[in-house]
Image (cartoon, rainbow, N blue to C red; front, side, top):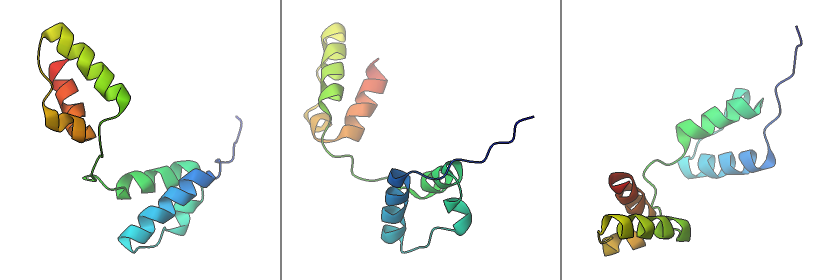
Length: 94
């Protein structure tokens, strides 16, 4: 059977993990820095869950407007100001 070495973390992964670690004032364990998969798992466990989503993206708005036309429903104004709310509105109205 072939034995493959795990791929090293990408620069983007490392940068994102460092940002998270700084915000949490914690260190990234050495074992998490050994492979892409290990670092990805660490990032998933530590990334912010309830972060402000910012305004809805243009793709979200276009998709929501399509749903609203088909279902003849209005999109609440607050959904345009929060991507998380827009996402929930879309999921509830698909």
